Length: 110
Length: 121
Image (cartoon, rainbow over all chains, first blue to last red; front, side, top):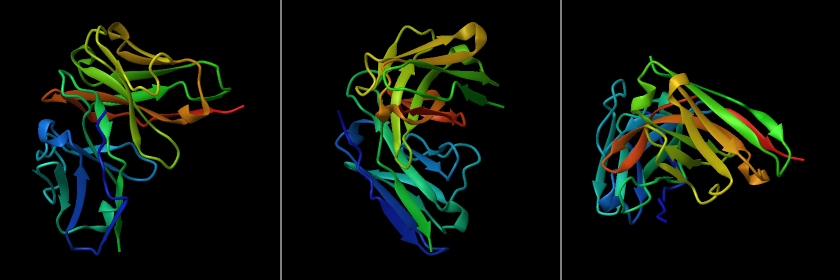
């Protein structure tokens, strides 16, 4: 099975740009998705298919990829963005891949 | 609007069984794949199982394969997770999630609030 690796934590000051990476050998062959989870809440989809934002997600959230690494960028970080962030991709090269999550990154807004 | 409501939370002894339910509303339930994702206390997300539209194609994580069974009743807009031979490491919040497809990969565009399962003697 494939694994996705995220840094455990990222810290930024308000107004700065936060970048959260996700690495995995499967990533060049599968889309990546990002979720935000605040304490006591269910995860929320914030990026799908590498770069797309669902309706209602602020434009400051964006996704990009380069080789085996994908990056979630939060521009102009706000206090409300403090949360755990998880990447997710497929776990197979075959049709209808399973889902696999990264270990999560805790974003702290200083 | 889309709503997913899980039920079946509880404390169970190791080796026993428990069934979770997820009732859906606000979308055509029979047109979507549905999945279960869990989160152990203080830990990250772990995909558990997925079920395609008419219940014929099912996938399981290795950690639950042979012990858990996912099913659905499209007439009742309900998803189930039958959990057998429960272990302490199955203790987690269990989320029901609606899935869409990105390429060949399922992703989860709506989630329930979760239901807590504790396995303890």
